[in-house]
Length: 629
Image 1 (cartoon, one colour):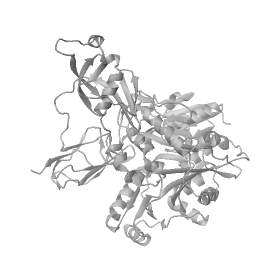
Image 2 (spheres, rainbow, N blue to C red):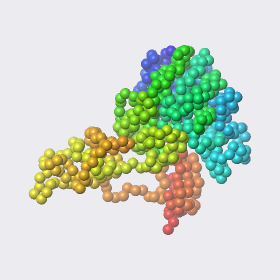
Image 3 (cartoon, rainbow, N blue to C red):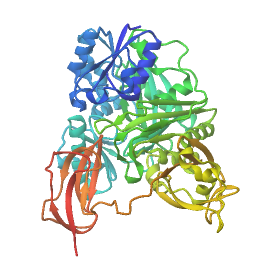
Image 4 (cartoon, rainbow, N blue to C red):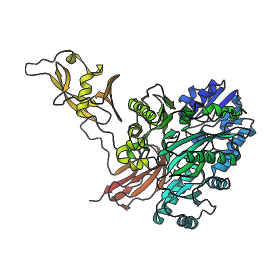
């Protein structure tokens, strides 16, 4: 086993690697950007080194700086985690040249599988089924348009280098092909520095199923069963589970065999994931991720293995045991907690985490990269943590997950927690209606704005609990008055809206004038100065507040503001242009996501304060419009 391990990453995966490595007796070295000086992963290591400013290009993507730290710290291995340099073949080569073990596959495998076009050619040669498409070198508009016609619409345009849904766009017909192609190229260039794309037939109801593989340095490659990752937004995973449900045994075996054959085709070493598109009883190779996956905990919970531990063991030269793979036990489900506003098209959000509390207990696991007090910035992916639940079967795992989400608290900015609560209890999810269009198909139920607490439930909450912050001398008397019971107006916020309540003091306790309490299906708990109220799929935090100001807080509807810091990557109008309601005006890139800005009404562009490529701060005006009279 290695003496000293450097972790070239951040967030929850860096925390996880640090804890496993220290358990195995390794000394752990962390690196961090200036924005992450007080991050959780820094404290999880034995020592930590700053490697540059907040932007990833000046810190976590600086291979030379990270290698210099590794040499100075005496590291004999580097674990890249996922993202950043984890699939960078040149970095893997540089580690080897420096006499430092790279915890991952060899550079040849990274290069072969890092190119979607090259990986498809290799899979065809290895007998692994692939989706019909075009993976050629000619990237001209005319050739790509002709190939799309040959494949047949709809087609999926995908960045040839990279993954994570970046540079991936469907074109449903010839009329929108060139516009989607331009968008995919732009995203691919920004994310991977490579604008090349490939085309594939776009399956209408596909499932995303993957197989975890593990290979040692002696040439043995095994699978660790399947995962289903079909529930996605923007082609990025939201909910994952293992084993993948509702597969025939014949299909499951074909997936296992195809994954092992795919890994064997590139002499794969260490942990990796082979991803497939499954529709009906057919499966097609999608891509191979030559690294650990975000969703690896669900495989760990059903196999009992620590995949990070086996990554380190394999990288240090150990052979895989003869009794691998272990049979899966029970079922596991994972959701990703994001700093994003699901109601507004999953728009990323920033701010400081004021509360992060998730219940602990049997069958529950939280992998977090943040804690209360940490700042979420626009420089990195908006994932905050992963919540994983295990059960004897799928229904038990989903029930445990749903209960934990209802009881969880995550405050400080907009998050996807309300969305996840609805998702975990959605009947279509329970009924195994799984495919990559799940969220879009059920958007009305999943993405509705959070609702205020019903008045009857509000009355029940205040009748049962009276936080100390809301009481005073008036509450310590019976409220007797010659002309009736005492009453007053109080303002209570439930996190969605502020309620102005006529509170009456009665012998039975505090009541709301004219409201009959109803606590059906709800649970109440004192939460410091507030009351926490939960019902299946819903949660509120009720807190006494001052009377809101009467002045309107709404901004000028004709001013489009940047919701978070980012960069202007597309500007489609100029001052003086006339625009129609709903017309696309500009596109901003922030937190690895493109935010689109449309005209809120028909009118005229008065001014464009920024130029294409400009960095824009949160709250700055992007465009100013005046409406038609």
